[in-house]
Image 1: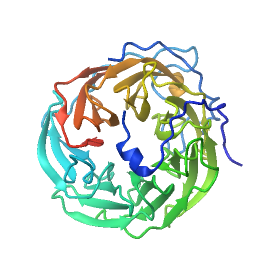
Image 2: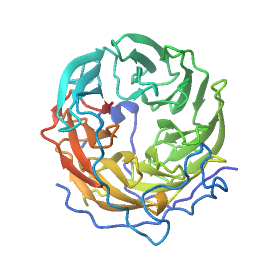
Image 3: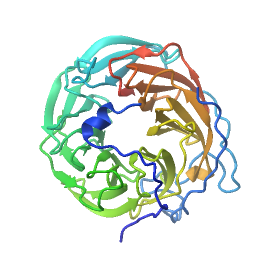
Image 4: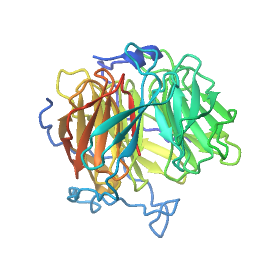
Length: 424
C-alpha cells in the first residue's frame, strides 16, 4: 500500500521544466517575510517504546518542546575546534559558457569565512554535484552529460579512482549510503536512479540497480520523469528518490548485501509542485521538501518502520510577490532548531524556525545572497558558516550562522558557474 499524500490541487502558474539542459541553464533585497506557521501532517507512531528511532537515536528533535507552538530556543554560535584553513570543493559545468575546468579546490577560514582558491582537484567533465565518502577520503561527482556517469576522486592527491555509467542521462545528484559501501545517483534526464558498489579504495563498481520512474504519469508541463535527488533515510534501510517530473517521492528498501532496490511506498505532491530536494530533521521523524516548480515548501512526516513519507500542505518559500522563483535546497542545523532554503530567482536564503520537534516550519524572513541564482547551499561541519553556490553570477557567498540569523561574511568568492560547494 502506497503512502500517498494528496496535498490538494495544483495551481495554474506551475513553471515546468522541459529538457535536462534547460534545468542546467535555466535562470531568470527581499524584505522581512511575514511569519507563517503551517501545520505538518499528523506524526507517525513513535518508533519504539523507549523513544528511540530505528537507528538508536532519540526520536525527538531538540528544536522545541512538543506541542504549544513554542518557538525554537535561542542558539549560541557553534564552537570551533580549530581555526586553521579547511578544504572546500566546488562543482561546476565545464561545457557551459565561462565554465570551470573540473572540480574546483579551495580553502576557507572557519573564523572569518574567507575563501582562498587553490586550483582544480581533478578535471572531471561537468561535475555539477559533489558528495564525500563518510570516511572523508574520497569525493564523488556526477558527470552531468547525455551519457551520464559518476566519478570517484581521492582527496589526498586528486587521483581519479574510476568512473562508471549511471545508466541514464544528466545525473544531477549523488550521495553515499552511511555504511560507505553504496553510491546512489539520480538521472534527471532519463528519470532513473542507480546504485553502485564501492570498494575499499572508494572506487565505484558496476551498477547493481537501475530503476526508471514509469508511474505515475508526468505532472503538468512535464514530458517525463526527472529524478532530482537520491538519498538515504535516517534509518539506513530506506532510500528516497525525489522526482520533479512525476511530482512523487519514491521510497525503496536498499538491500545492503547486494545493492538492489525494492519499492515500498510513494508520496505524491500536488500536481505541478515539482519536488526537487528533501532534507531530514535530525530527529528522523520529519523532513522538509523544496518544490521547485510551484515555488513552495512542505513539511513531511516519515515512518522509519515502513519507509512511508507523507507530504504536508504547501507553504511559503519566502520569495517576494511577482518574482519568478525556484526553491533549490534545504539544510537543517545540527541541533534541529533552524532550517535554511536556497531561493533561485528571489536570490535569497529563507530562514525558518523549526518547532514541535521538527513538525513545523515557521518562516522568519530572508537574506539576500549578494549573488545570482543560488543553486545549492551547505553548512560547514561545525555549523558556524553557510555557503551558497550562485550559478549565474559565478560566485560563492558565505554567511556566519548565529542561531537562525545569517550575516554575510565579506565579498562573495568568484568561482566559474558555481553550482555546488562542499565544505569539510
